[in-house]
Length: 621
Image 1: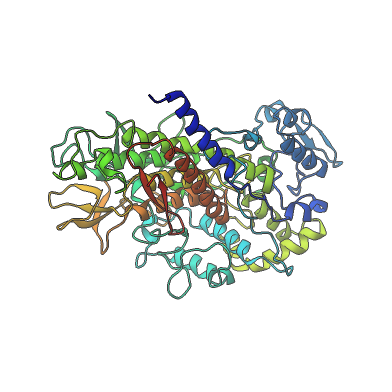
Image 2: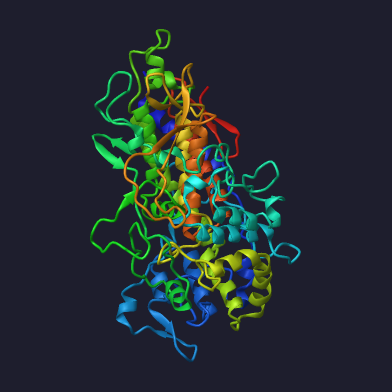
């Protein structure tokens, strides 16, 4: 007779040994923190500390030293006891850091977000410090020249701000606007586009960006079809449907059946052409960690809807809409929505265990039909739990990278240094010389910013009044969670499934069969596409396409959309997306490896396509 207690202990011990066998990496930063320590740490994250009202630079370097010490200590209280917060301290006319006396300002303090999360332990998956990210692109390369990779990713963030109210429907070959073409032309002058020695982007056969590749990301399938993943637009059918899956509503309505409730894919419309942080007083206030008023909403520029009235909504149509989505999303919601859509469509699970799940693909055939199927194990609740569970693991790991390792400044702060050079402010010598090299590389883009949403400045026009969150840029929480959650989805579902319309008219991600036709959905066109204005009513626009969209491609695209959507808001760089996504993937794979040890009877094997295009096999053979 077996001893279940001892066997359970043995499985846990085996999982612990697996976790312990993972080699802990050396965490390496790019050196800019130390390199510019004598120049007021101008390439490090200093948001929330006292800043000079005239330059927006850190006033007292000792404040950063205490901030760094509090991070390394790993306790919350030192951030209050030892670190001077910019909402509680101001810089007076004599350049002294003194207590802030305005109670309205001290009452709007923004807290640093979870700076100690990376030192806690977990009981499943890789430890928060057992995964890492390579150094972020430094300001200068090893020869003291401008780093071409950083120049490109800063140019990308600026260009995304210029294009913030352009429609996603125009980010396809043959549909582009003059504004998009101009931005692409400016980006293609930068050397890194044709010589991608670090983190790669999608480019065309001429090794250049075009409307089909620009801002798309790097993984397989992201360049195919519309810019937006179908999972950010479509819905699924409701409970009132026939045996063939027809009726009960249509996917073009963009309503996701959540049990017996509905999730509407339409988002509130942030006021078009409304940007923030393009004056020095506004910029400094935000860098001090003082909370500003919220953004405004409305379908027409200059005509915001007064609170507390509900704002108008539409399907994600512009870059600003996607920025709004990633401003308030419950971090894993896009992937939970995708999972619910796929389950509702009856999308087959990985062929390695589909017969265990009781999925319709196998039930319908005599040879593979089973009398017992999956639910808590191998079925819907299993994947629904896992796709959300990995999020906290990713957040803890990325917090260690953000605070303890890289402490990288946000794009808004790097743009603030460029603005100082434009207006001729007195700055540290190293800032003037090294940021000056970056300024020269970004010449055409900076001119476009000044002539456009920058209103004569080189500030980065932000989608959010508060700018970035109160934590460093690298890595990105959204991208880490995207990598982890999408990896779980790719592990469970058959990623070779395609989005098809059947002979009977049903829409689903399914295994391709004779008579299936490729189909794609887009948001309806806006009434004023050049300015992002309009609130179209009705459904998504359905059309045919030349090739099927694959589940793998649309999931990769979903991860890229959510991650790069943060770049569209101005709060992240491309490298934040690229490396964080892969760290999240590593975390999810580690959790799946450990869980596979617990399946002692039926063979449970998953094939997981990675974000680089390789395939990882997990499970007992």
